[in-house]
Image (tube, rainbow, N blue to C red; front, side, top):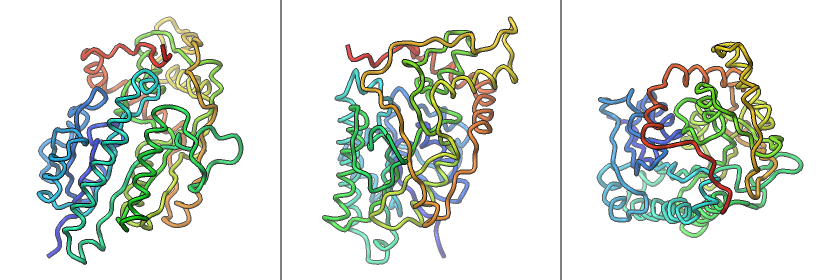
Length: 354
């Protein structure tokens, strides 16, 4: 008799992690989610899966060696997936220590304790065990020519991207030094339901719904590639189950590369259709330009030929389609983001480095 595969994951109450939880449960996996429930995470994000007997939650920090060490042999995972991270570049400019603590030391703790657990497994169990670390395109720095491939040099620009780059390198070293079965994914900018309001797209949607100004950094010509979160988690599961050990896989959106200013205008135009303002003026009238972010990278872009060829994965959600879904979700689920605002998040400008 076979049993459901077990996934020990961190950061499952966050934006991307919560979507991964839902996908794994829908595929019959058992999931243990270790989450510290920091400001950007909330159990309400997974309210819809309450009562699912295949889901287990543990409140705690990934830097807690003793906690992680006790959970792994108790749950007996087949896979470990590390989502947990501080992710907002602006916050890393103001408070870099938090990013080193979580993104570097936390990732090391999960990695090292997972290796200790791995060493207790039987030969057959070791053959199927995998450790997947979730990373970002920002480790490569600004992209001036062709989109970066997986073997591009790292050139991070912010404390956030530097902390993720450090974690990537430590994870990769465990494969070469200890033959520990690791995988890494680097993704472009995600968007979709349940994204915390500090990020560009949900911030613009919520501020538009509240008839507030829509601040764009600098001239707004910075380019990002946009990846719909449900496409992303499907790619992650493919890498986890089918990826070649020791390898890194880039994940990006479907023709999603565009300037921030264009993104905001698409949001405004879509909202003009689905929820016109009471004064019949376009939401574009709310756009303002504010002081640019210090050290702001101009463009991020990833080449995804490798994951297409090796794992037969490609994104399926066009930006306009994903944006319409996202806007509709924020309109229909005010309870979720209004709860965040009542907890004290004020959506004020941070990250000026002062």
